[in-house]
Length: 217
Image 1 (tube, rainbow, N blue to C red):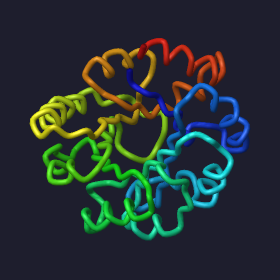
Image 2 (tube, one colour; image 1 turned 45 degrees about the vertical axis):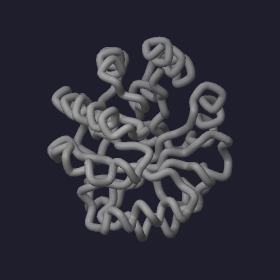
Image 3 (cartoon, rainbow, N blue to C red; image 1 turned 135 degrees about the vertical axis):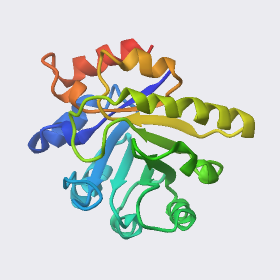
């Protein structure tokens, strides 16, 4: 069954701590976007706020670095062991070196890939990471419409995983909601980052999360 991580960029930031506590009993962890306003046009959630959330929740954090220089951000993050740290294949860095630095910090390495980037870009690193994140919107803002053609990347990843006998998880983030969730999970997605569908729902975030969880079950 696919796991849903509430994406905190879509939450009301002044109520972040309360919302985290409300959702903790129901979700495996929380997805946090850190953006440098260079790699993508937004500022996301700050390093300071991310570190604070890491200390206050007993759930796993999945931190997504949408930044040009992920290594400099890694050095400033104080995450609990086994938190997921995802950076972009498109960012300016030595990819293998970055993966090793994440592992040295006792974190779980993941690579994200933008909608326009070919999936073959990540193949050389799939044996080294635990998760590949398919972006189903262009990075930057919560609430964008789902780009259905990004689902074409799932098949090659599943084939590569089976052929090479690897264990990485396939994640998707961007534009996911109750209308496309079943279609997405049937393609073989393991992990989902969902923001607006949870935090903008009229029924409230907890009830929205429960209803979305029923769809993936």
